[in-house]
Length: 334
Image (cartoon, rainbow, N blue to C red):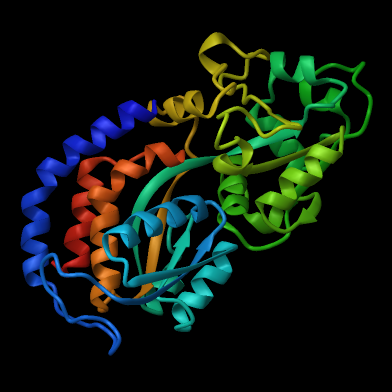
């Protein structure tokens, strides 16, 4: 899947070249005193601060490193938190850019928050690999209704309730995100509610969620894709397994629903829309108004064009060409 995504994004780069050239010609300089007021290929200098959600953190770090290789005078300060903090930091001028794993809310738009989609990923259900019912879970999966019964309706109390097997009588320990975040919001949307409707033991951040479920054989939670899979092996993080979603609700995981063994398989399922959306979703770079600093604008342009070649290799889905073009036009104010 990664190689396919890269080839698709390479094709998009060619068709975007003329649009980018026009855009660059229209860009206004807006650098801070310690940045070169340069045009064309001249190096950029200065600091760019980014407060991003956990879901986007690995990609932002990768994009920042690659862009800095082209402009050694630039420094990227990247911090990870929930989507709510990213929005707050960006709107309050504490960060040049933010990153969120959901659409911008209307009140945020009214306050001047600008957004550009940069990649696509998904939220996944996770369980401990020591779960006593793991074999049944992987074979039966869990339907959307059963998951909603666990996190929203409080009707799922035992593992038997979740997988439809009365002999699985041990209690389910549900975990949820205690911090306002895109993962919680998207997972709730999938289940027919809002994040504040999600019940369970509250934890902060993906790493804590994965750690809590790993240590609890009766635990179940949800996590962003790049925290559920090991970046090196592309297999699920040691100690957890991905709970398959029984999309057609027939009580078993059919071959076409069985794509969780590797990150590559999941990316293919997201790209082909086999994995439902939500919890598949777009990820966004955000700024307080259309960015004016030259280095910030050029970084965004690069992320939406040449930078897309790094999206697949970092474990995300590159965006379709029309979405990228729309984002570039919006950035140009046209």
